[in-house]
Image (cartoon, rainbow, N blue to C red; front, side):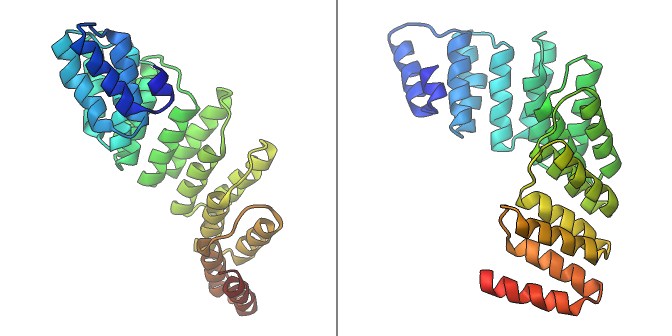
Length: 269
């Protein structure tokens, strides 16, 4: 467990080997800690080897924590199909799932671009009366972004507020990006405004996504206003910030503003 918390996954595997050599038989807690250590250390293959090979060999049954660590390892390794298989195994073995295990499975699907499966898992979660947390909502909204489902993203965002789960910059960025892809620049601006009310600090991704939403809709004045707000804040520009704002000015025929931005960009980069 100490190695797990210290992200020393190699040492955790070595200690596990020492236990077996000395005939000190590991239990569920031992394997859960070792799998979690591997997952946090990025060694998802070792984590899954422990779950699918070492544990059955030792005749140790996994619990909710063990499954959660293994599913998180799948998320790390982009193995969404194995994550789904583990969720199914939990149900077959009557191991209770929770927000952590299902959130990890949803994230695994979302990161792999399997947004429909991610949203299906979210629905299963609510049907099973498992209370989603901020991580669950963030993953589900990000899945909506990948699928271009801005209405579903906004529904989830509103449900999050109704259930008094605080949104963070990750939530807002995913929702704004979904609106950008859906051509809903006005909704993106509304979300940007709500961030200030909720005392959520926007970052470079937030500004870029909102500016891009305005740029795609030809709303150059709003894009330029956002760029100037960004300049007055402590948020760092990048080339995407400049390119999106310059493109917005070009679409609006504001060539002088575009040239000024190009000059500023040349000085900064």
